[in-house]
Amino acid sequence: MASVALTGAATWAVVGGTSLAREAQAVGRALEAGDVEAARARLPHLCGRDPQALDADGIARAVVESVAENTSDAVVGALVWGAVGGVPGLLGFRAVNTLDAMVGHKSARYRRYGWASARLDDLAGWPGARLTAVLAALAGPDPRGAVRAWRADAAKHPSPNAGPVEASFAGALGVRLGGTLSYGGRVEHRPVLNTQGRAVDTHDVARAVRLSRRVTWLALGVCAGARLLKRGQ
Image (cartoon, rainbow, N blue to C red; front, side):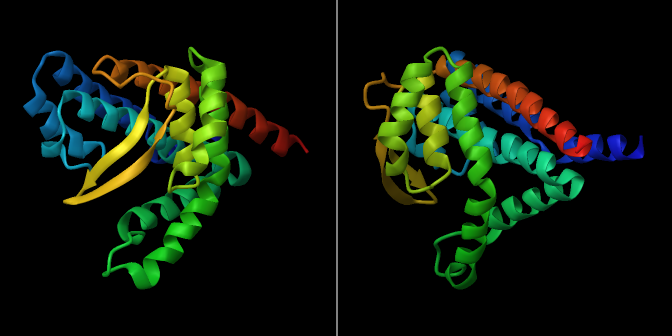
């Protein structure tokens, strides 16, 4: 019983699905109300984009991309490692994820040792990212589109884990992700994911949140089942 309680407490602490949905919905509500300034003010709670450089649709695209990536990083990845290693697996994954967020940057300050935490995070996130991409294809409104975008575009993304996840979400939702981004005044041009899709608009924020929730519940079922099988062996 103590083990169950500890696992529940650790899962509550590690899995960030609730806060992810809350922040995304806050930005989405501001956009649907036509309050772009409020959406810009809220966006840094969700991602590191430069909000002043974005219009309403650009903010919506940033939110959809962040929801996709964080569904993998903050939710599914933690569940996978919980299934593999119980509470230590959950907390270990979150520690690696947090370290990468703190020092895993390609800046002069962190270049010497930040690359190591970034590579470790890539390795730890690999299984969760693939499971997220698979579940997004299964749970989304366009499974074929998700698989097509994943196969065609995932490898173009600079991140080996964000690529499959964002491409699968893009195909599932029928939208284009990627393109020109701005972080901390630095402009980055990324390949477009799901080139056959339409441009993201403000209503796609709510659609992305719904897809994220479906993926979360499916991942919870898969990982809980895997954990029970592991304990029964």
